[in-house]
Length: 156
Image 1: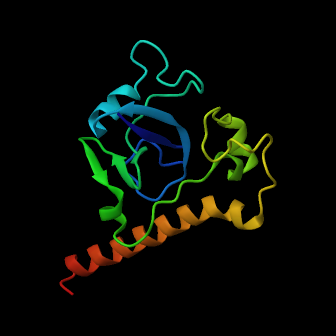
Image 2 (image 1 turned 90 degrees about the vertical axis):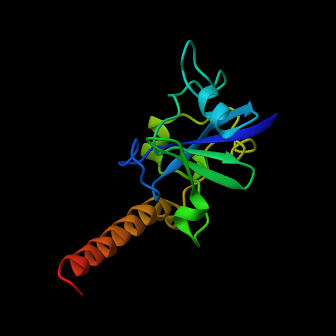
Image 3 (image 1 turned 180 degrees about the horizontal axis):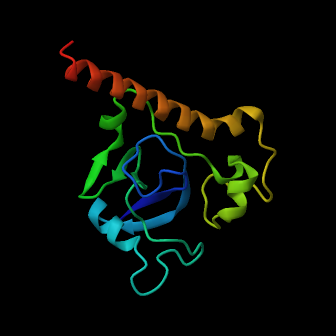
């Protein structure tokens, strides 16, 4: 059995196939395959994560298998490395999330990034801007795609 880490999207675009968005660690499941990991991360009869009760894994979330990450899509999964091509997947540790988001999402008891973090650390300006960086990067990419569509429509 392998351990698959589950990272839930928590930004404005959660529940969409948006690649660049804020995600946080929700827990892990033990499974043989990616598909089994997804099935085990569902709240079918009870919470899938007993130490950190949370929602079911859904579209827009990440399932991490070792150093590979997969985006949960409407149908199946997409390899984040292929989607990003050159940019590594970044997951914001709970202790680095802005305070308002921390209040909405309690610290996971088994968070690998927070085991030694008895109380939240001070969030630096850099870390606070980290979440905003995702949104800015996504907005920039959306604008580039719109420009590309415009060029195609106008025959350039």
